[in-house]
Length: 107
Length: 113
Image (tube, rainbow over all chains, first blue to last red; front, side):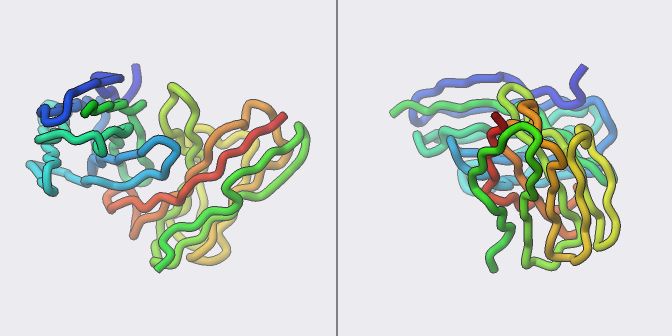
């Protein structure tokens, strides 16, 4: 069983829709990261959280430590949000990554 | 600040050749790490370092060596390239480890024929 599971694997939405990507993990963590990777591009950190909720613009990330679950929400999605979104959980010295969720937002 | 830089961007090797992927950061970060990204596999940790002179193995270390003689540089050496090492390689850094924001380099696409 993978330590980090993301769902869905692929997601197609229409511009303006509300998007939710989920991440479940099975190990104790010190922090959870949400990352974004555009096609052919590098990897950018969106959020790092260890409790509660964070918001940057149209992106919101939440984490429930007791349930070992995090969600990434995108409000009013836009075609430029099309990317792979990656969840990673951090222990004391290592990060473990989910396989990513490929999001396509159509105009 | 340049952030995290990686060279080369692309490389083609023949089986059995050796090479070094370079990674440097100018943010005075203690923690540096190397990952490989393969289709359907997600990012997997190869080696990491928590400071100059200290390195440790990750999930997939076989066939790779690292050293950390300075805070800034963390090169990854392929000793004898194999087709199974065809992948995209990312270097990352952070202040002290997984509890901090991670900064990734642009990646190196390696093909071994």
